[in-house]
Image (cartoon, rainbow, N blue to C red):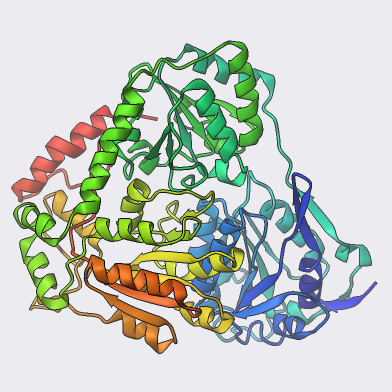
Length: 640
């Protein structure tokens, strides 16, 4: 029975955890991420500094940032590996709360070890302690409770054993995975206990494939058999079940088109005959038009968020039946669906067998091909836009002041859409793309094509800005043989780019493309399309009471250069093409500063989004938008 501290036992335990899927084993923990402070440096830090384990220790720069790296890693590993993250007490711990929510919303495993106050309470209040006079047992770490799938506090050394077993139960469970918080009081980290040797034995956590029960499966089969125009939604659950090919074969067999969520994109191939691209608020006209006609929505592994369903407005057929295949019952019952609980790959195969026995085929004729062709024509327009062709309608329809200013200030004449499509043309077909909040995910879900599975990596469940510049490092660590790119807006880059220093330290190559349009362009567009004046969404100097002065120029290339990145400043498509080609030759990390015209993101395409617009305003444009868009849309949307 080895005598170990709590911290030493944590490291020894994690070093012996494995997962198994379809008979293949994977070591679950190969790295550990931390920012040392007084709360963990001499406890967990001592344990990690020992040489009797195989875990690589990584040094973070910001606690939220390092957790985003870990989320990006776990997602790109398809949840078959994690990077635990540890912080000191107080502000270090609180910084990880946002990342914990990001992981939980997206069903990504994230293991957190925030340091805590002393269990003995002898030095209270300890440095960085949050005191709650009404309850002295509450600390900063209690803030993790609502954003974690499992939470525990180790106040005695022997509690660690059950806590870690339950942590692994949640982390490796496709139904319940998300953030796990194991709070570590500082004194307990260093306390010793005679742990049984069997606690440290090699553990294999098997991720099994659950078939649907016959009764639920039959409900789904009956709904599909009644339908003439079914449509599949490919969600993230398809990806984590490795069910892309099974879904492609299913749609091919029964002539069923499919649309993709942000989490599900790249699970199937974009060139598949029945692929309609993204669906919902940020979807294509092809997917959204057919979704409005569909009499049966077959949702596979999706949470059916408001962006996927266009705030429950998208499915306009009055006779539509929603069926949901999901491993998680909470998600499966949404929108009054007929559902079957089980592994996506297994259940899709069960459905295929049953529908083939009934000789089922959809009744689509020319609709799928026509919708795809119309969308391809639209993409070519967006791709071929140059400064002159795009500039004139923008002056007329959007915000000429900002656009003129931007061109004069930056000399940038790139449109966001043409830049995205140029990147797609130039980078490797199997390169991994990272994105998150803002307008870039909207354009990317519509325009980005995927030739390789799991090559599109969007965090859009929590839409957490600042994720991109960190997650690109995690994805690269998970896919070291591939080029990994992140497309990040200037606003999101300003929020959090701390882990670019860690990428340099780890000596791995990442490619960061900053789309600089001098502001939070997505929300600026939301304001102005709803009749509201631009307010605090453009990066402008103060002018009296308002932020309405000149645009603020930022040289993002210099930021990358300061950290040792190879950098480029790009103003037009020719410069972008040259930069992308040269970047492929580089061994070090790359940062491109793309000067992209404001207001040049995609928008619309037969979708609607419910937002909390003022029902009364002195401004006529706001009232008109409320009456003609928001109120009308709410009346048309499904109620649950």
